[in-house]
Length: 417
Image (cartoon, rainbow, N blue to C red; front, top):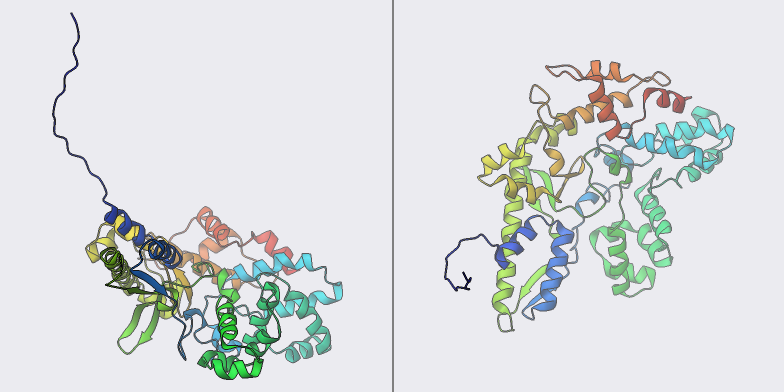
C-alpha cells in the first residue's frame, strides 16, 4: 500500500493582534518616558508627524516644584511628605561613613533630628548651636559633612542651597548656573531676558540650564516615602480645586504632536494622534476613579488609604482588569503628599476597609515617634497597630518594617546611643 500526498482546503479561526491593537496596548502600559520614546520613533518614520518641545510658560512649573519656589523656606515643603523613619534610617546608616570626630556626634544627631520629611533642615543653625552650647561655625562645619550624604540636597537650608548641592554633584555648577540659582524668582516667572542680562549669557543657554534645574529634585527627602515614585516627571497632577480634588495630565512631561496633512504618512500620523488621545483619556478615567476612592489619603496622607483591588475598580469604570493593570503599570501622580505610583494605591483589605499600604504608613509614624533609646519590638508594634478592627501578626509587622527599610529594634537602639 502506497501513501499519497493530498492537497486539501480547510478553514480555521485564530486570534491575532493587529498592528494598531499592539500599538494601543503598548501605549496603555507606557509612562511618560515610554510614550516619548514611542512618539520619537514614529516621528522619525513618518514625515507628516513632528514633535515640539513644550517650554514652560511664565508660572508653569513641574508639579513636584509646587510650593517650593514661591517661598524658599522649608516650612511649606515640610508638610508635603508623609513623615517616616526611612529617611532618618538612611541618614543614620550613612553616618559612620563620614568619620566624624566623637565631639561632633551630638551635633550630627541634633541636625538629624531637625531634618524635615522634605530633606531640608527645619531649624536655624543658630538655634541648634545655642541649644548645644557650641559655636555656629562648628555646627556649620558638621552640617557641611552631612550634606555629603546621598541623595544630594539633603540638609539644605533653602531651595537655592538644595539645588546648588545637586548642581555641584552633577558637575554643572558654573557662573551662569550660580546666577540662575540666586534669582529663582526670575526662573519661576520665566523671565529669560533678565536672566540672560544678569548672567551675560544667550537666552538659549539660559533655557538649557533651566531644563537642567527642572531635572533636580527640590525635595530629596520625599524619595524615602513608602509610596513615592522614583525621581522623574509624574504623568498626572492632582490638586484641590473649587469642586474638590481635580486630576489632570502633566502636559509638561509630554511633547506636542503636530500633524502635517499635506505630508506623506498623514493618515498614519492621525492614527498615532488618536492612539495617544485614547491612552490619555483612559489613564485619566482610571486615575480619577482611583483617587476618588482614595480621597481620604489625599486629605490626610498615606495613613488614610482605603482597601482597593483592581477587579473592583475595573468594574466601576467598565474596563477589563487587564486594561486597568496596563494603565497603572508605570504611571505616577503628583499629590500634595508627594509623587505616588498609581499601582501603589491598590492594596488588600486588612480589616475595617484599612489598606495594607495605610498600615505601613502608620507603622512608619509609630516608629518615628518612639522614645529615643527605647525602640518598640515587633510584638509591641503589632499591638499598637491592631486597633479599629485590624489585627496584625508580628511576622506581618516584620515584613512591613523590612519593606520600609526600618532596622529591627536592637539596631535602632544602637543607632540612638
